[in-house]
Length: 638
Image 1 (tube, helix red, strand yellow):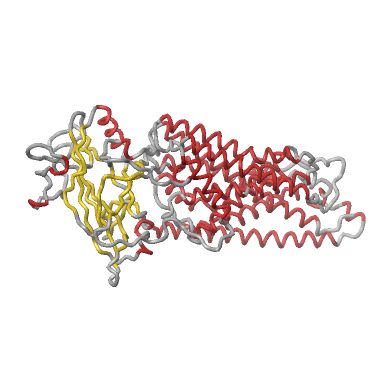
Image 2 (cartoon, one colour):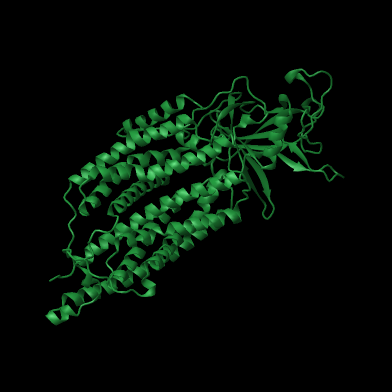
């Protein structure tokens, strides 16, 4: 719990709103820091993470060495929601001053601490640290290539056996060999940090005589005797009642990498050629399909409209069939029109949030170096887009002859956020039960509610009021008083079948990129190709619009005028495939074994799929609404 947290975030939100008209801005983590020789370097520790459990823990939840006073670093809303817990550390660094065999502390492990260490090592937890806003990485030689790859953080420990023994033991990494890479300015002698690496070792340290805190000379690690730690031949076993001596080395290496390029190492941790090829291949296929669909639709519609406008005799008019025949019913309000208006408004809110966030991300404002910036921006943008959600929902509500605009406003302001907050609260309670640092504190929950009720809800009301004051959207044709009977449809025009078929193409537009997004979230990797993500988003919009228009056209040609909800669900059904793919990813790519972790995964992916359904459904509906108004205003209705 951090009492000042709510005040920090509320102040940050207000400051963001107040600073919007300003001509200048400052991005945290972007300005470089220059260090002179012997300048102190602040090494910070972050959460412990594991891809097996997805439950982060505070660094000091394990019996590691602690500084005299633990100080929490200022965290933004996105960092807290991600489970980041950034604190100071006992490690003392001085710029370009190597240190060997420095003793951090000696700790005695009791039964409870030994059990916790064994559990964390068994679950392959990694320790994350930060130096000058750079995360700690472990260099690993790539076997297939003559290259080195980097993994974020080092493992708390390993499991293994002594030579000649079959009993599995647990060993802790208690010696860290740090390497700080720097780029030096030859004219000013100032240096900038461009790399932060570590090689962890497990060694059972020995010393002679009495222990005298940090002045004790170790037998196993003594720079005066030129005895340094280079392997783990005599590892430190984790066992209750045993003492563990934590030590570290600090080395400095000059690098040709400039400060502006220092994140390239972190962003190229995996082979990105497959990533690029897959995305381009997917985009080309979807663009080709979309172009074909657009050509077919344009030619077919042109022929239909020309033929209908050339009907002159009454007999020809009576024999007309297809989409013109249902002109008197096509704009009849659908069942549950209030709910449809709410879904459309929420989809518009999502669309605005993603569009604005991705534009800022493409411009470089939300790079991985700005920890938590992406999530914070998405939350604040979502709140501000409540204005457009209220406007859209009230506009359609008035078109459907609704009169209680306050009712539709309340539903728009509370339906999706209420469902999302309920799921989030339940999942957060499960994380609390696991005593994980990923659990959102009460003050943060209160801050989220404050953003919801204090900013989002009033903006929805303002947008709804403005939308309801506008003249109602007029249909291009008159609606008959008595609804026309819908003829029996062919099997391939069954609503369930067309809806499920319609969701395949939008999902195909994003599933390649979805793999890398899931990998960055659940395997703790950096996601940075926002340019490609923006292109995928544009392709998704085009695909949702075109597939919905095509299927809506076929539906109207079959004299079925109930297109409102079907147009929304056609592209919205892509969320079903997204959730199924999430299940496939869970069983094929992740190694989650604990029940709580599995519930967290599927709970968050269910929420993400729901949001994807609302987004794509609104895109498809708006495109279909534009299409029907266009074609029925283009023909002469007698």
